[in-house]
Image 1: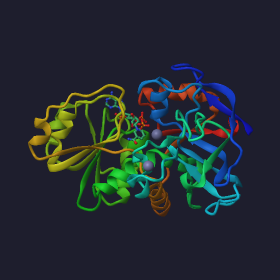
Image 2: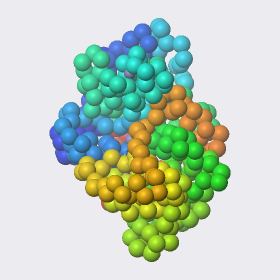
Image 3: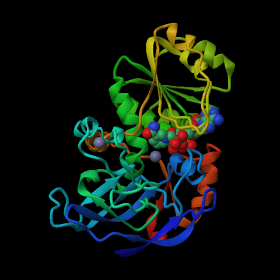
Image 4: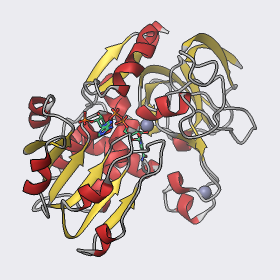
Length: 346
Ligand code: NAP
Ligand code: ZN
Ligand code: ZN
């Protein structure tokens, strides 16, 4: 066991504070990672606040982890000391079900082991990336290509893969009109990745205050959803809409923006249910779909894609002591566009 400095919420809704946690000794197939940077995902906030239901405390959030391998177990073949690596939302899964075998561990039928707010196969609670070290089985570790700095790579481990996976699955590319709903941590990655895939990209944001950034990051068009004219002008426009919004939305209104047989993929995870009029999908033969992060092989593919296209996250690097203020800013849609903790400051 190793004692490691961390930032934790001691109880639901409590501010995060410095503490220490124990990391297990490195086992046969484990990798010990010196964490350098950890992104702050809105999911961290939902879970600290128990917005999705009962959670495990103390909670060390963080599932956008970038660091350097500092020790490997005797059975490890894929990584060596000094390698640049990342860990996302999962640290284990059953590895036997059809989804795990297909590299879709995020949909493990027995439930994957979440990087934090989970219980590992050893029965111990998992603790995430707001800490200085983590021990992870090598099968749930990915390689960060040399072309990507670790700080801007960290958010790719959740925000990046969460947008890459549905954009690929629903064929964002040349000739496709794609809208990204919400210009936050996930949304700005969606703009960059959809643009790199060759799609015509529109941002749908509550206001125009981030318009210059959206256009600079690769959007072709930018509209405010607070303006009712937006819904008239963009009716039946998009092949694909990806919603990254963290609050309940009127999906009926957004479905009108799809072409016939278009797809609205929701990746946002609001704490309350939404109301859907099924005529919104019957008319036009539309699809309302969901998507959750991506599997380990696709996460590696996404990192390689991002490195090849020079895509990192737009980040605000913070000290660990600023995490509670950062949470407030994320909640007021005031992040540009991902807070990343420099774990040396923990
Ligand atoms: P974020 O940085 O806070 O971005 C969310 C964006 O949604 C905001 O920037 C804002 O964009 C928009 N928004 C927020 N409140 C809104 C409201 N009331 N009405 C309309 N738009 C609103 O959060 P994030 O880290 O990107 O995460 C977004 C959501 O995805 C969270 O619920 C998170 O838990 C979830 N998530 C899901 C997955 C998955 O696998 N499916 C993975 C990671 C995160 P504008 O300012 O542009 O309007
Ligand atoms: Zn996340
Ligand atoms: Zn499984």
